[in-house]
Length: 314
Image 1 (tube, rainbow, N blue to C red):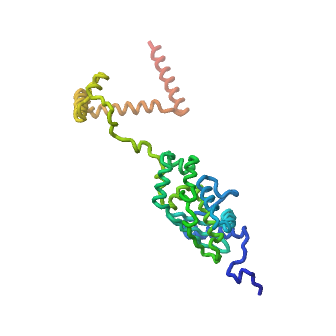
Image 2: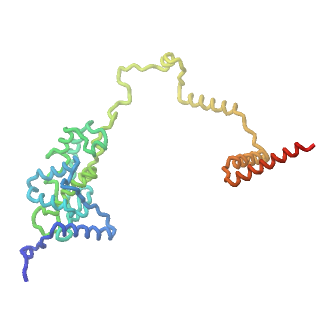
Image 3: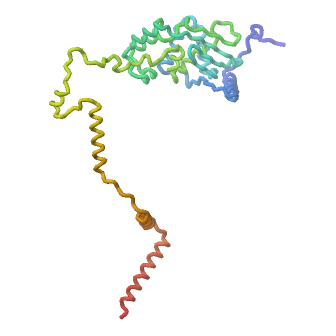
């Protein structure tokens, strides 16, 4: 009996890309049949991410030397559609990745420290006008640089990330974990708000609130016109109080109500007559069929001939 080298090290035999795709499709179908809501990662083309948030996540992963040796295998895995489910929640990502079999991946991501988030909010204050601009990545270069800063930005460092996989690979980061990490970047292309969910901060905190710092009271030394001056300027009388204005409106409404004549209820015979006349008008305006029209014309002609006959008689 022949054994492969993988048999002695506890690994499964190599599975081709086409077979992995078929396994992923079968696994996804089974999960859906069981009623589980899945969110697979589907990538069209070679690019894993195309938007600011997705690309920034992937770039952040690739600048850490701890991940350099294992990430390339993860890129090929995620492009081949082996991430059959990826769920992002506050502080944790859970994924199912198809390899020699279906493996479970868990990625824990630390939250943003309160002081760090406050610093980001302060530095971005007034620079982001709307949630749409933020989530679409329509940001200034300064804001982008601040959010992507390696030490003080929004994206996690290598020390903020811990992961595990059910596969037998003894490496610190297996290809299934790497595929799930890239899958996060692909998901942020579609749902960028999930980055803030994962890091446990509110993206609304970065939006500029127009007029939030404006004082309600007038500045010191500002001249304010009195009601008498306004009356003289515009030639109108200003009510002294809100109550006086309300009383004036009520008085005017009562006057108009008294002046309006009260309609007497119509008798039943009048209402019936109006109904009959309305029905007659409806019948008169109702389009006639060709046969009915022909009969009506014949009837009118007959009536006209009778009138002429009677007029000729002595």
